[in-house]
Image 1 (tube, one colour):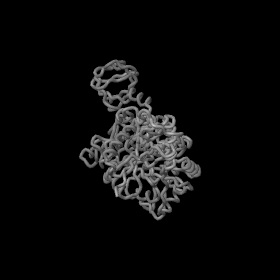
Image 2 (image 1 turned 90 degrees about the vertical axis):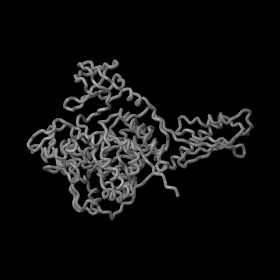
Image 3 (image 1 turned 60 degrees about the vertical axis):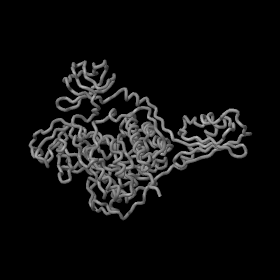
Image 4 (image 1 turned 30 degrees about the vertical axis):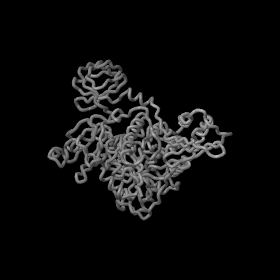
Length: 616
């Protein structure tokens, strides 16, 4: 018996229905969106009616819609969330992405559950436990290597989802309290203030400034476009693009780029892998990951260690873009430059100043090598210029009208009693046959195959495009109106068949005997915020629980970040090297009234940050 092909999914972010629909047209196999509340991006919430619109559109292509209900939930919100989940199930949402285990104790329909990256899935034990309690899919920590992903894949039946592109959290997701402890805005409640994007001074215990005004926690953006094959072979079946706050142009560009790469990989796999959804996408533009928002790219820890060229974007938390030229002369209002590509009015440029800080500006006008900035600039000759906004490219994306259609085969044949039949089938097992009865069928005076093919091929405005058309009618004449009606009837019936055969997944049975693998005691790292979550953990062997900081704010130093990223290594001062001995063991990050102690766990190659209360 031949091995079954593994379906692969390109999962796109969407802040609203328009973005979701464009993502699907550009080739996404699934989209994830915030529901009306309790999504980890509060600014990207959507009503149930908006989600219904996306569900109806997506399911035409067998594409899926996942709703993010992935914040922690307070006791007085449990009933509200229970009602929301029931509504999401009834409109056909395919799965919930969640982190709060209280949801598993709610009275809700059997909707499929995905364990969010906020669940902090970084090892086999945690993955196995979540799989045993009913999660169909696990969204892995971004920090995992291919080897670690492969080990989890071998240990659990759940499908694995991994980020392939977009912004990076410096902390393990779900294990970050920096925003809440410093200004009361909780990342685990969808209100992250992006503390990691601020400029910091790195200070030792004696007050010496070792690094000044640098974006020490701001990471580059993830780009694993060259690692699709390795990730798929390691067991990843869903490739996730980050960016539920990004605009529609960003989503269209990244989805189109990765859809092409995934199509190429699937084609070269010889049938081992297939795309999860149906249809062929034509984006209407040539995608380019370099031309869309990014802070510089990194594959992160996919190889098992930090890339040699670094992970952080120390000079700026903003988009840097691609090198476009070098300054020859500069006055406040005119810059002459040696350019590697032409620029356009409205382009965004930037450069790194002497302190290593990135400074951006917009072009009002371009005249060959002469650049006229919108704001006065003073840039030393020889400075490298970067283009971080390509207006012409953005305009092309914004004006493009992507199209996605599903290939169908058709067979036209004659039946007894002057009847004509048209069979229409897709390659996902759906087939319909429609017939019409004519008063009589006469022999044609002229050849009819080409005219009949043209009529049957007119599928514009439908979900379909014609692949193979088999005409078995021969030399008989069929009126064009009859053929056109057959085609319309077949399209209508195939639409209905595809809708009827759409396959939903459902929540798996919870193994009540599964024991929580981290022991009987939960800490603030576990984000327990309500009575149902406590009930869940009690039923799985936990006896002692410290509530989430959002429920009971702790005093004194509080651990706010646990990260695989290491400042010392990034700055060439690893404690395991001679250069690392030049700096004190205890270091501090300071930005305004924010002060955090940095602890280096060299045994595990991790870094921990602790919030220090003001006045300490």
